[in-house]
Image 1 (cartoon, protein in one colour):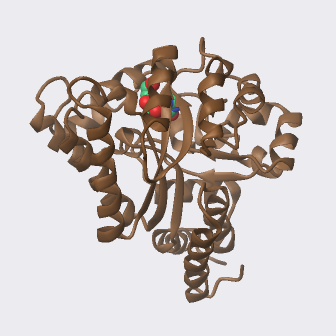
Image 2 (cartoon, helix red, strand yellow; image 1 turned 180 degrees about the horizontal axis):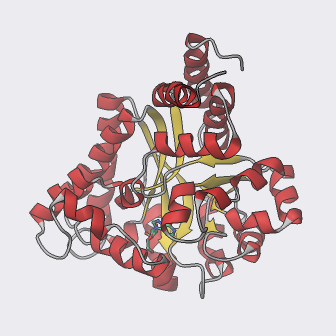
Length: 348
Ligand SMILES: O=c1[nH]cnc2c1ncn2[C@@H]1O[C@H](CO)[C@@H](O)[C@H]1O
């Protein structure tokens, strides 16, 4: 008989060293207690600077409460130096999880303004991007997302920051925040322009509302991947469509429990989606806010999908497949995963 606890320990060790790509992770939502404390010291106010108090502060009643807290952390990112520090330090923590490539969802609309012009914001993230690759070996790319709750003005501003500037590393265009009251089709015009510019379309949909929002994202925004998309599990035709058209869902299991969009991990629809052949990647969303990290999410996925090392390596590869990068970089990332699995003597 194998000892289940020993098996878990082996899988955890495998996950910890597995080279990974992350496709759904928010820039501000990645600020760890260490980073938040640094920012809160610079800008004392509503957000506790004490990492222990932050654990309580990051306990959410529902999605609306989460958005309110999220925006209070956004307020801490005031200057170009705050933006640079946040982004560079997030990459340091990613490197600790063996993340080799990340598409960070950035919401410039919430930070850019009179005090922080778009140019200064963009310079700060570019500085962090090049430093992170040099110092930590983490390749960062950006998805600029519209915060839906702020409506068309936010969509226009986001499109202009993305499309009227030269933004190295920008690969995708998204939309986050609330779904209720903000049909994805509202933002068709900005997505049309972003897509014409060559950006990947990667809206949030099907997190807090049903499969109709996922269809809307596909039909009106030309979604190539979907952030969350978990309510697709309620619609077999939609799952078949996602599978046939190779549309990846960037799933974040612990986030869904923390924001109470699913009751508990045991009832998470991930197994239903995978059984229907829907491509999925595993992600954290806003890791410290949900008390998780990418290794933790891979462990959750292993439990939910009953995966061994081979299955986990396949998950890591699925994220590379869905990434908005060139084939050469994909080949490099796949090579790193393969080299690791052969070290572990894992059949793939
Ligand atoms: O899980 C999530 N769902 C939706 N939006 C999110 C999530 N995590 C972070 N944001 C962020 O919430 C902000 C408020 O509009 C947006 O910046 C969005 O990117």
